Image (cartoon, rainbow, N blue to C red; front, top):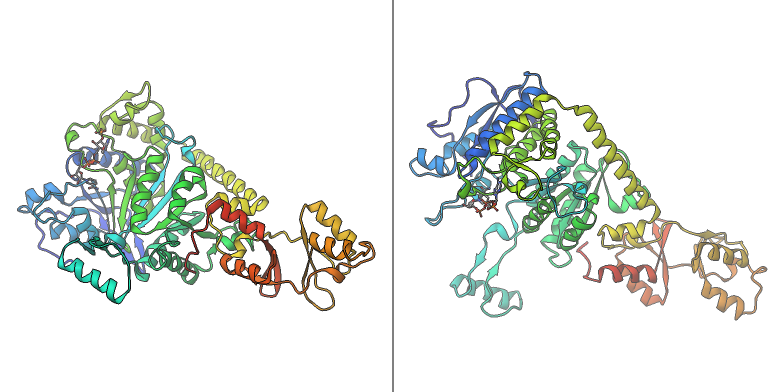
Length: 595
Ligand code: NAP
């Protein structure tokens, strides 16, 4: 919807300060920007009041008064209804949020009945806020059910406009339902039970690509290590599988010089991530839930479809005890509305009691979005210090022994005191950086030493022979003796070796079975027989991107146990029946993701 400039009524744009603008696709943030805020309903005014004070204090401290925010109050929800003759979602506010580019809002009540759209849905649709962004990380001292919650630090990008949320649903028993059921059965030959409710799940190239593009750009701007595309493409090939494929296409076509795939990481780079490159990988959604419990530090930026993102964002937030303090934002190409992710908790309204964390950290996200990292860091680093002192609101007090329960505004006071008291930002940043570098190194070592195990343990379901193959090829020369080749096999505990091309230029394989059948049964001497005389040649070779199913078909058809894997003409690995067996044992066989 295009929002027209309505007659100004209640929103007063501050005379001082300047609006944020977008020039050549980038945000231009003045030293004294005007930011929109909506205090929200229920507990909204309490937390907004507290957060505005903390944000202002952090900006003043971080920039020695050089930078300052000029806040512009906008109205949605009950406060708007009071001012705009019962209108919960006035055009003036929608226009202002777009015009000011960056704003932040408290929770809103959705009036029940009367045909109201949820205000949050209205905002998303009218401003086309297509990416729901949720950073989830642990703050020291915050109660969590995980043993090592500090390993969780992800930013989830959830597609906000498509999927089963598109609202294309037909209730059982209605003429529309019957019409579409008839079409599906008669014309499309689809089979399903009578009387089924029917919903449609549209996933488009446009919608998928703009979401993944945003996630990759975020990873680049924030020095992140990887972007994981989370999907259910093994079952829903043309929606979820297509999302995955479009995601990889965006990475390749638009960010080819700064991204690489997981296959390239393990293959070309032997597990060592090159500086300045972001790894693009994908995971099946159900495995991702396991992985975020078992190996959360393997994941960094996550891009996913709407329904997966809905479940996953709350599940991950709960892991770090962050349901009450998880921040969020809904973002269009540039316009961004940051928001508390909890509701209005009406029973606590105006009691000055609740935790301001969710809105507070949404503000931190907002500063990061504006490029005001110093102000953001001040809050993130001061916060755990306050928690460590046991100063917490009621919700944490009931989970932390010996904590002192304080009000919303007292919590803000304690935080501001920490911020103004000064924090050795550099030392803390360095400690954090050192920790990240150490963890990154450990991951690299694991990838280098045990590539296949590492891939499987981090939820990468092998799809191609390139994912499965053994990369450290054990080779022998064509004119080597069989006896020497047997020592090589024993020393390396392998049942076959790859034979380098002889004068004919073809690769070969020598197996233990060849020793039994051609040396012992053939009554030949291993010390007088050259490898080239008894090895199998030519070997059957497949390209690294060949799917496992095709490789299995080749093994079955030719009655082989192993295949060499090539990239162009070069043999780069070997894949055996045992490799396929181990992968299927670990992950089952749910079929291929549409390639
Ligand atoms: P809710 O407002 O999030 O509250 C549920 C419970 O969560 C509260 O009773 C409280 O738990 C805890 N909680 C929420 N915010 C907290 C905070 N800042 N500090 C500490 N604890 C907090 O969910 P709801 O009761 O289902 O929804 C109430 C209204 O909010 C509804 O009108 C709904 O439509 C709206 N809503 C709005 C948004 C939004 O605007 N983004 C999102 C969700 C819901 P305890 O009772 O255990 O103390």
